[in-house]
Amino acid sequence: MRLKDKIAIVTGGARGIGQAVSELFAREGATVIIIDLLADGQAVADKINAANGSAQYHNISVTNKSAVEKLFSEIFAKYGTIDILINNAGITRDRTLEKMSETEWDAVIEVNLKGVFICTQAVAGYMKNKKYGRIVSAASNVGLRGNFGQTNYAATKAGVIAMSKTWAIELGKFGITANAIAPGFTMTEMVKEIPEAHLDQIKKSIPLQSVAQPIDIAYGYLYLASDEARYVSGICLTIDGGASR
Ligand SMILES: NC(=O)c1ccc[n+]([C@@H]2O[C@H](COP(=O)([O-])OP(=O)(O)OC[C@H]3O[C@@H](n4cnc5c(N)ncnc54)[C@H](O)[C@@H]3O)[C@@H](O)[C@H]2O)c1
Image (cartoon, rainbow, N blue to C red; front, side, top):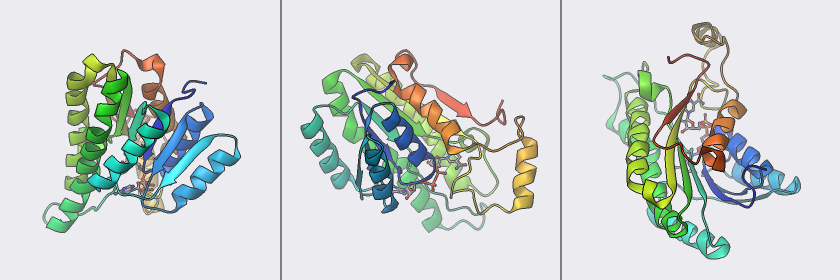
C-alpha cells in the first residue's frame, strides 16, 4: 500500500476525478476526508467504508474559510496529522470574453483559485508541524494552452500552477511538496454536456485518440501524494494523452 496510514483530504471528492482519487487513495491505505457541496460525497464515503477502507464526508465549501479551518483543526486533533491535501474542487462558467459576466468571472475565481488558497493556507501549519506534507492541486491543460470560452477558468488553472510553484519554494524546507496536475479532457459531469460530434473532434486532436477516464488522472495524484515523489516539487504534471507537448 502506497499511502498506508496517511490522512488525506480530497476536496470535490463526491464525483468525477475527486471520487476516483478518494477511492484509489483509500485502496492504498489512506484515511480519506472528502469535502464537497454534493451530498453524493456521503455515498462515496459509505462505499469506501463498506470495502474496509476509511473515509468520511463533510458538506462544506472550500470557499468557506472558517468552516475549512474548523474542520482541519478537528482532523488534526483526531489524527495528530494531515499528510495530504488534494485541491480538486473546481467549477466552470464558460462564456466567450465579450459575453462573460462579472458574476461568472467571480464564481470561478472564488472556487478554483480562492478555494485552493484557503484550503492550502489552512493545512500548511499542520504539515509544517509534522515536517511532512503533500499538496497536489487541480490545474488543467487549459491553464497551459488557453481554451475558447474559458477566460475565467484558464486564468484560475494557470494561477494554480503558479501558486503550487510558490508553495514549493515557501514550504520545501518543512518537508512539504506542492505540485499541480493538468488533466486534459476527462469523462466526468464537467464535460459530459459536450455534443458527440465535438467530442469526436476532440478525440481526433489527441495523440492517444481518446479522452481520459477519472482513474487515469487519479494515478497521477497517487504518485505525487506518495513517498515515492518525495523529491518532486513545483511541477505541473500534464495528463492529457499527449495533447499538450
Ligand atoms: N473533467 C475534465 O475534463 C477536467 C480537465 C482538466 C481539469 N479538471 C479539473 O479537475 C477537477 C475535477 O474535475 P471533474 O471533472 O471531476 O469535475 P466535477 O464537476 O465532476 O467534480 C467537481 C466536484 O467539486 C465539487 N465542488 C464544486 N465547488 C465546490 C466547493 N465550493 N466546495 C467543495 N466542493 C465543490 C463539486 O460538487 C463536484 O463534486 C476540477 O478542478 C477541474 O477543473 C477537469
